[in-house]
Image 1 (tube, rainbow, N blue to C red):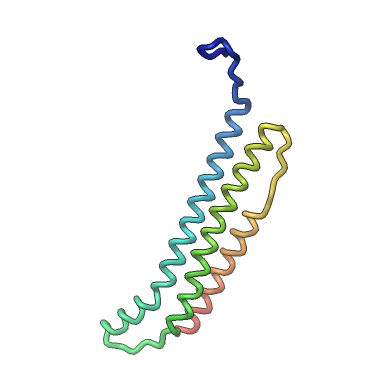
Image 2: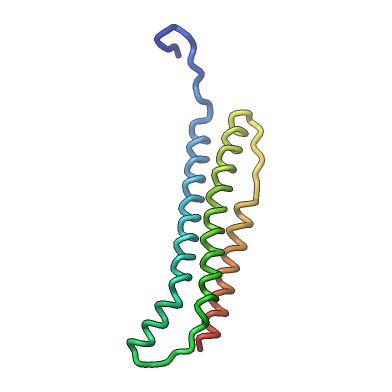
Length: 131
């Protein structure tokens, strides 16, 4: 394939593999945005429970606001970190595809698993304390 000056333009090899890499990157970005949004919701959940108990006319023993605030901030930071790691992984895999030296990495998978376990444990503890 030639450009206007008659020079050869290199064709991108493995277009499907590159597009799959990009789809994977975008799914990691969606996941990191979801974790950040969940962190924001958790941070605001203490305010919601306090307001709801006030409207219901009941005094519900909710955990102190700092408990959910700290965990919410941690989730937002974890989501941001996952976004950065996803970009680094995307560029690294893009280079490996071009050089035909692809080697899978588990760091984002492990980070997502740890965050899922942490979210689940936090919610169980939070619900136990609110009974």
